Image 1 (spheres, rainbow, N blue to C red):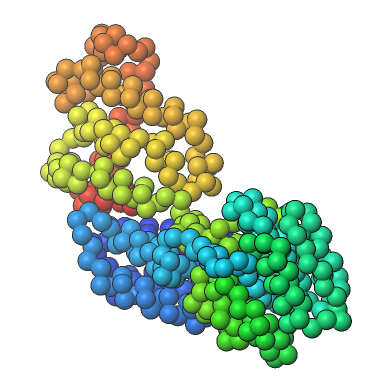
Image 2 (cartoon, rainbow, N blue to C red; image 1 turned 90 degrees about the horizontal axis):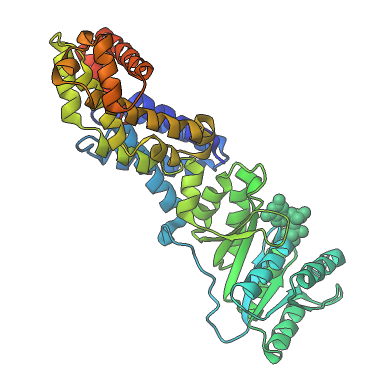
Length: 449
Ligand code: GDP
């Protein structure tokens, strides 16, 4: 799902590190990445244009306050706008089906052949029966394909709903009317009407489904669209939206190798909420759609924003600056500074908490077990430094063998561990020496992103 957007955003965040505010130039670069990523994800061009324009406006207007870096601000803007774009008025909320009418509530399914209409009827019937405890009747108005009627009967029986038979010699409107009548007399709560779809959009089909809609006045008219259609989804969505007063969209085959762009395009073109997504061929493969989750999933960020916020809270900018000034003035990086760095890392929520918030692929790469280990080690290192005298902390070179033994006993560790800690400190000190003061400040700021 839009993997490239994630990668590109990560790159943008990196390049913007250390810059105090968003400028026309760095925003331009970021927008280019977002634009390319969306196009690669199959989002339709007009949709991309509008989206990018919106982000530009928001991003340039955004003052970057306090310790917030421009990269983070941009990610936040993109995330917010993406959610708004996918969710529209519904923002982060899932759009519910409207079934609050005198029974039977009628759901009309529309879409191209192969979009997944019949499968979705079965899935929906299952969901309504099991979750909402509704008595459900299904009917097929597809008089062009007898196989389609049989297929609907099969899936309906599989989920334990009732099926209203129809035959190819009947008119779709008559079939639907008869089914409504039957549903009313047999106390069904919901009637789902499956319809014919063509391989492409054609006028006769649009007229037919328009007439069907007028005859039965459904409370939900759902446009079923294959997420793998990519760019073509936009034309199909437009045609159905013009022909019918749609109330919602079902995006199917999101489990496949869909690039996910259809989700953005379809919402944008129809102005109707995506209510469900199909995530498999099996009849339990239907999920209520959550715009905010989809946005996060598209950005592939896990809770990367929360992580960014934690890091901001944790990094004490003043302390970082003090250290930078000290090193700049030729001051040495002593064990007090080293301990301060360890504390800093701990206050960022600990390594494993940070890891929890990263996207799954990073978590796997980092290895959770190792993180716990690293954290434990950090705590031990702090303990060792705490067992030293202030003089030793300020001048670590004073620490000879006998002092090491005393420190080890004080901290409850082996002497080797004291040695290891000192070696690590030496390594860090070497790094600090190489850095000029300015670069250090930059590096510390970089830690926030
Ligand atoms: P219709 O012509 O619109 O009624 O489409 P069908 O319901 O017959 O579905 C067409 C094909 O898409 C079938 O092979 C379904 O199994 C498959 N399909 C439908 N929905 C999904 C889905 O969410 N995921 C996957 N992987 N396949 C689906």
